[in-house]
Image: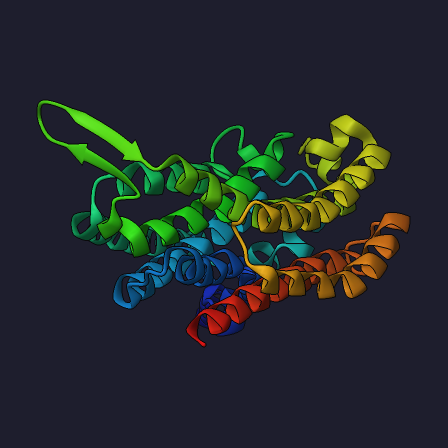
Length: 328
């Protein structure tokens, strides 16, 4: 009996490998792109940078990103209708992890990111509070609750806007708050939100390729998991529009990123080095064609992830080249 208890305790203890799988650490590199590109954009377009606040925000943002993925895996385990998925594919059931330990981990990560947010609000201004709160709300209820946003046909929109625009805009705000390009005054008697229209347009447009590529990752994932999701009563966008139109949308979102770069360059948001982004088309075109032919999680879904990495890497290189050009 004592040996059995020890065995169960050992099985329930989370290892480093279990933790990395729970938070899907391999996917976090892609999630850093909105932050990195925002840092480069704020230097090239606004010529403003606050490294201390930016670094503090990065740690809070990263912790919250880990928490969201942990919540996603935990809720998938809780709501799974397939015994095979629950106890053979999901890391929690497969490794017999302690649910209480996972809950404490999630609360710890969310609590840390909330403290970071409050500190930055005090340092930079009230506008960060509703911006951060909106990201918190979407991030948590994306997978938590009786009807999570990820189980609705709006998952692509919420993920794209929250990560692509939310993180991007907050990073820009933290580096330009002293310029009051967009700001909120608040006291007991009144509040006022002010901003420069062209600044807001520039920020949204520069974030557009990020929103599109991140939404495309979610769409590709949902296309690959369509049959399994239906079995688990998870009705995502491809369920409603069909696989054929889902694949067409995947192509449209990917190639719209390049249109956004061209229009942004013509409109003066970027300078000519941003055209280096088009180098990514050499890889993206081939991989998009392959994914269009078949949507298999283990075989072609990684190509959708690589599309995001290749495109946004070239996007970042274009902005970095712009920054170097400005310094010469």
